[in-house]
Image (cartoon, rainbow, N blue to C red; front, side, top):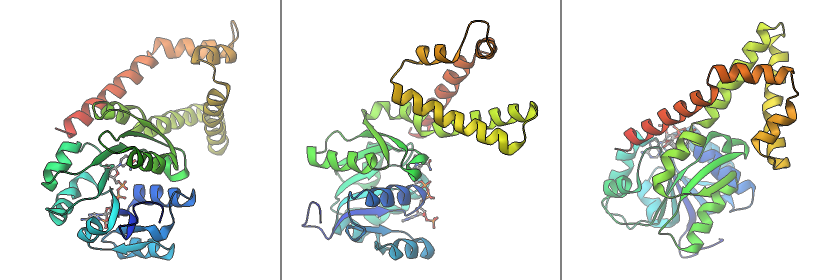
Length: 270
Ligand SMILES: NC(=O)c1ccc[n+]([C@@H]2O[C@H](COP(=O)([O-])OP(=O)(O)OC[C@H]3O[C@@H](n4cnc5c(N)ncnc54)[C@H](OP(=O)(O)O)[C@@H]3O)[C@@H](O)[C@H]2O)c1
């Protein structure tokens, strides 16, 4: 076992759904821990069987995890947390790592009715392919505990530390962000088809352009102004498109959308 050998498992997971699977299996693949160091609490037989077939332990008893794990990842839907809190009430808790959207650390601890160390994380869906982005508030954890939490999410993408007060902003940019990218892709495909491309051609052109554009931005390290200038020539096609975006206040639309997501995140955590 990598650390905290006093406990039977390094990591317990409550809720073995889409996100937990992506994070846990991704981190195991990167060698953060072995499947044998992880136990997953999940009511669904098929999901438990899938974890077991890959060497993970499973249980239906959340309380068992509280007693036997060094870290406890809470990855149920926020509305299912009441039931989990009931099962854990009064337990001596390990370090908690919550990825539940809109649940503040205070709200989680108050539902559990005990004090515990807790990190709150806002990951996103591309962690399923090792390209996730997570905002992590791990203040109050020791250096080793913080390193474990950051390592867990860095194994499936990138992780940045932010105070809890900025996690709603993280939600608005990268938590909900993949949907903005898909909306842009969908619109670009539709526009391509309106210009005579067939769907397959338009999808390939749009997806590879977004992937390639992001990869070049990251690798070149250039500013967005420089990148836009590199694709534009005076009197050319790109500038014609950019002028059209400008007239439609594209930047304003993005800003208002992020603001709406952040406001909704705040409402949900009240
Ligand atoms: N999906 C995203 O893009 C995203 C992004 C950021 C954060 N999050 C957060 O990640 C968390 C998980 O989301 P998800 O998309 O992975 O949801 P999900 O696929 O529905 O996973 C939740 C799992 O928890 C199980 N569960 C329900 N009640 C339980 C209980 N009492 N004890 C143990 N397990 C229980 C569910 O089982 P059943 O299906 O049998 O009910 C399900 O397998 C949510 O809190 C969400 O806010 C998600």
